[in-house]
Length: 117
Length: 114
Image 1 (cartoon, chains in turn orange, yellow):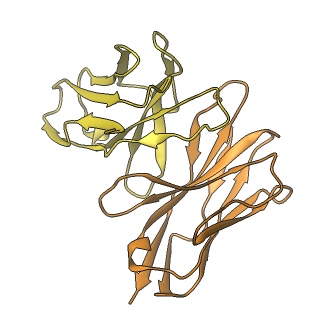
Image 2: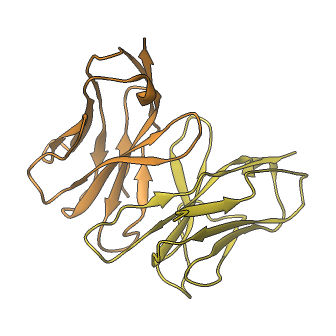
């Protein structure tokens, strides 16, 4: 079974600064996807960014980028130029692509990020 | 497009009562999922349906049943609610089989069992 660990229950960052959220995972799979989802106070789950394990290039989406270290099984999220609207819970998630349980998301427990004006 | 919709938004039940949570998607996705989210936890998969007519258990299926009514709709039923089922329930859908396996989530249903 896969496990996803987010070691930072809470973090804070000043507006306009940069923050990095950590995620590690444990799997024996070689083919998988990794995701970061954002959950603001409205509780809506919003996709932030996705990384395919077979791609060496780190994914980027505007102010959001990842540092994907496959050998270390690490998948951190960097938020640049933090904005007040970035205040939310952030969940790291793993998806295997073959075998039993494929296409199911396994979530970490989340990191609560507060952006301070 | 509305994306993934869920009804109701909030429900209070007494122990032993039954209810059905409804989910619909208008993205023509094959796969649909039900998750629950408890305080301090990430989402955990209850049941999923890889395609119309099929359903499978996830990580925490006990106390729940599901029905994939058609390609658009996937319902979750609690036959005899228990306080341990107090949670926020999320439905999601995805276009499994293509390169993009992203799951898109509904707004959630908050359930309180007394």
